[in-house]
Amino acid sequence: MEFSVGQVVISKAGRDKGDVFIVYNIEGAYLYLVDGKSRPLTRPKKKKTMHIQPTKTVDAALQKAILERQYIKDADFRSALKKFMDKREENLNG
Image (cartoon, rainbow, N blue to C red):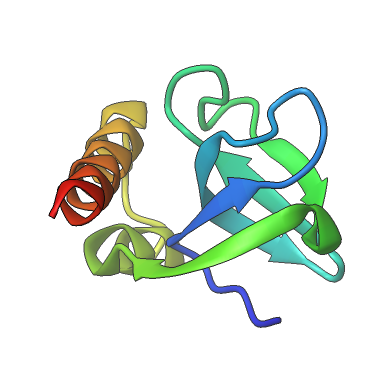
C-alpha cells in the first residue's frame, strides 16, 4: 500500500475510526494526518499505515505546498476535505 503526501485517507481503527484526513508527512510505517479541525497542523495525528484506508484522491495543490514547504493554513485542509466529501456524497447519491 503506497501513501503519498496530500492524499486523502480514512481511519480504519481507533476512536477516530471513519474520520477523513490528509497525509501531511510519512515516516517509515507511520503517517502524520491532519484534518484542520480536531487535528490541526500544530498537532498532527500519528498513525500506523495498517490502520489507514487509502483513497485515490490526492489534492495536488496541497501536495505541492507541503512538499515545497510553503505556508499552509488549517483552512486549506478543511477546504480540501470538504471538496472530497462533497464529491463522495455526489457519487453516492448518483
